[in-house]
Length: 82
Image 1: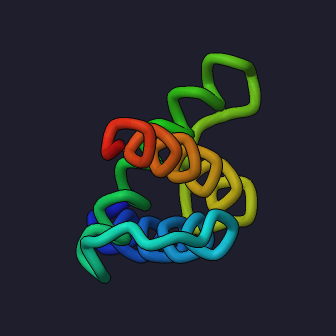
Image 2: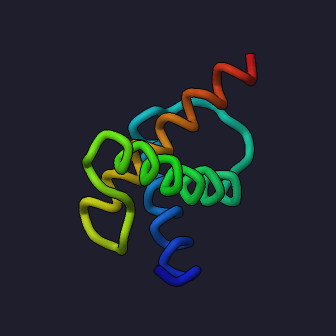
Image 3: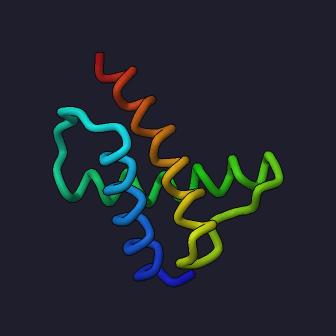
């Protein structure tokens, strides 16, 4: 995947993760994108580890994988912030 695709996938994953787990987590738009991109990597790693598959492109499976990774990172961020 190209860098532009990772950024778009990260944006979508970050926004969906914030929508699923709403809360007052500072950072705004940039942190949402970074969280989503990192979530795509984490989700891809977790997906590969359990046999689901990595984030390979802009498709529903990759979006789901990236959102799961972003949710994991968001939960860890909230635990560490306390």
